[in-house]
Image (tube, rainbow, N blue to C red; front, side):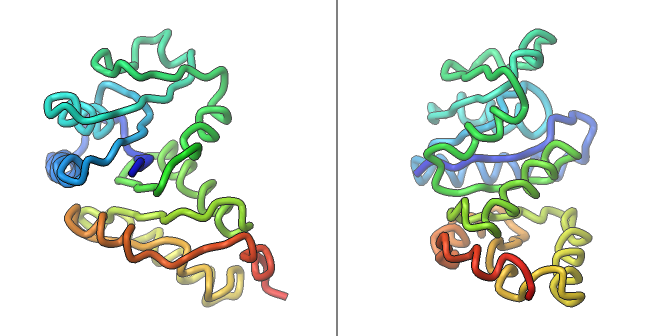
Length: 192
């Protein structure tokens, strides 16, 4: 199984986010899961990568060339793809992946997550999307999605496009038990 992980590159965040990330990395390693990640050396990206490298896990980094030029790339990743643009990076994140897992993060993480949710809504992406809601970080986003449905901006079926989980141990079961999604999702992409 290959899982794309969206996560923070900030080193200034609460230590509990780092601990949850380490727990998730160990859970993935137990299942021999390959991860695809942004390839940064710091923050949750760096923490996840460090655990993977230290334990012989298979990891692929995808990063725009301009980020490599400012030395953001993790030096321990041997399988690296360097793209010309952020847009190309996001496309490569979705190639041959079996699931998306979003950890807490800033605008980049949110942008990647919202794009893949939009693609799923339009029937262009079918894999599970799991949002690790460590310390209630994503509570406002979950509320926003629920309000979007309540206010009829989205269909009630869209709540099946993702799953919020609170603990790293719940991520793999959520992937395995996720709702099947198909290209027919385009039929209810808008509320008519």
